Length: 251
Image (cartoon, rainbow, N blue to C red; front, side):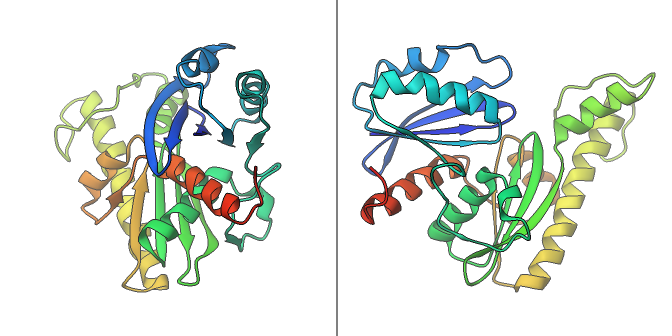
């Protein structure tokens, strides 16, 4: 079995693959992670034979790798360190690209074809662009919905911290709904406009794939066709493992 771990700024998501199936997955909070949390959950699955980590939190990935070694007795691979995502990377500075973005791009090309736009709506919102030749071209990064809500609270004297939910309408009738309307409709409109601009560059057959905790809300209010796959990163890790294993490039 493969243990795939996606470490993001908000959550650590673990998935166990048996054959072609994602057998189980669960989340642990990244910022509040306590040593041993993951390994205690994994004791129920003694058949893990390989571990791959995709991380945007270097300190936590080092801790997790250290914890996993006695559990499995095998080497843990970390994407971007001792394992590469098998996709052509056209970034000017390839090492600057988050491994999660490359994993999502790679997985999407295998699952949906190309050209593609991949939108990951998490702590940050990323747009990743993949050409018809299945090369990663680059993309965009801007603050996620919750960062916008938190920034309004932190950077103003009177505005409150609002919990993310659906706005009551486009025109807010109180402070809470004015904030929700501005942030939710604003991010949705931005997504629609940017998606349209990118499709004009890549071609009308370009598909938009979405993942991340808030992608369903963005899809609802943007009105654009987004195919959502919430397991995209975990599936990508599994696809990378199978690809490299078939080529005898991984244990």
